Amino acid sequence: MPYEQLIESVQVSAEERIKDLKEKASQDAAEIIKEAAGKDGSIKRRHLERIKRIVDMERHKLLAKVHEERRMQLTRAKDEVFKRAFSEAKQILFSARKQPNYEIFFKKMLKEALSELEGGNIQLHIDKKDADLCRKLLAELNMNCDIITDITTAGGLNANTSDGKFVVFNTIESRFERAKILLKLDIFTVLYGGQGGV
View 1 (cartoon, rainbow, N blue to C red):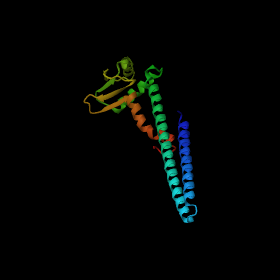
View 2: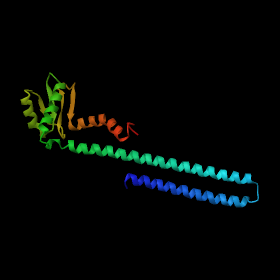
View 3: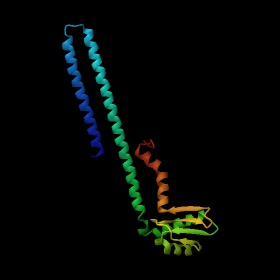
View 4: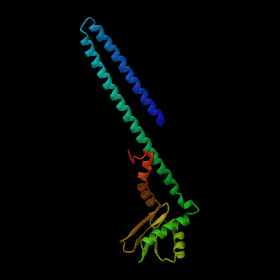
């Protein structure tokens, strides 16, 4: 059921409940008036005021409940949009190796990793699908690194110094997770109108 229909359904339900309460209150008031006929007017007023307070309290409770349900539905809908956006982005990114510009992308990721680990012996951890491409690019860059095909990734590589003191994670998956964290606030700001969250 679309979000707007859910809200409309909740509002209609609340209005029906309020209508029922008013009708009940009117019936109660009519009975009290009938019983109090011939008695002091102050008794009638006191009973009517009591009934009015009960109806008002019920009305406020129902409206608060409707408002809370609407807020929760909106929060769930926005969270679903957020998840769907990242799911679609993930599908696109994870097909990067099939794209014609993957070599350019891989070269950029390789250069980034190498610049972070300047000097010393560098080990490159790659998916075996990228082994030939990695060797070709290292030759172009006139770099000599140990290539280890010990990871499975949608693309990119991890690199470390041979002593293991410094590590650079530069796979599509690691970049995606970093981007998700960095962009989450921006996306929620757009979704929640500048509130940055729920």
